[in-house]
Length: 261
Image (cartoon, rainbow, N blue to C red; front, side, top):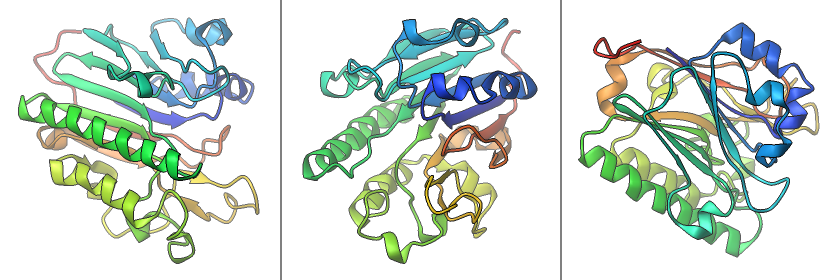
């Protein structure tokens, strides 16, 4: 199974930049996107009605802001919009789908650069989600968490760590919040498969030819529960895919032999 995550920086914008060609070429089993910046009635029909796929979406109350969407080849056993907390669900940041034994969280984590209030919001969001993940893990439920985490965890995860220690996305306190997910038991599967390898990034500033020079950040992740590690065949970043200031991340996961087609 091929699962992908991608912050598209606008579902209508990426539609004009070859999204459907990319989708048909990859033919993923699951594709999660973030920052849709659209309400359901604003999504082009050929994107919401891709043959052979179901389409699920959670939009922000504020138009043109935030939002997540998930395409699934198989019909999920469960779909949940949001996390049951009004302050977070109003921004359309979480879509949960269950695929047989796996709970999949498609998440657009907040950016903390809007001042102290937004940084506090980001902290509360991180901890609220952490508590939800802890319940899944305690219940022995396999878990996949993917999306734009808006935080690089280690210096290896961005091209210029020293220059960005005071910037949101790499401040020590934000890295600590992200680190609690690993303490909980979640596995950053890309880093597990590519330990110590620098230069792998998923976001580049539109300015200063940052992408051409690979001056980027790795802030888009697949995190999985430990019981899924042995089912992973690959996890890689796809920097050759354009259309956004982010690029997709792919997780290849062996199917559970007990699943029916």
